[in-house]
Image (cartoon, rainbow, N blue to C red; front, side):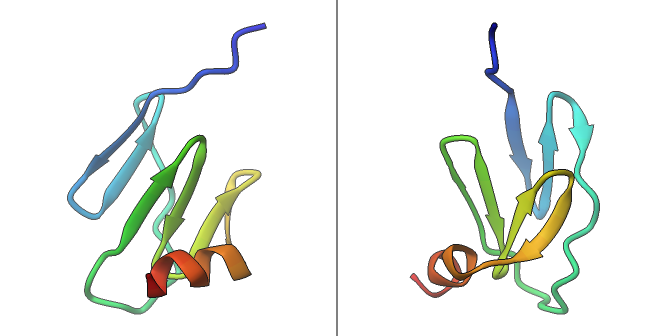
Length: 64
C-alpha cells in the first residue's frame, strides 16, 4: 500500500494532494510552517487526523 502524499506550501496556505487544509486557528499574522516527513506544523499547531491540534512538538518547531 502506497501512503505517500504530495504536500505543497504556497505562502501561508498548505495543500495535501491538491486539497487545501483548513485555516490554522492561530491568531498570528506571520506564518511559520514546518513540514517534516508527513507531519505539518504551523504557528504552534500540528495537523493531525484532519484537524489542527496544539501539541508540544508543534510548539517546539514554532520556537526553533
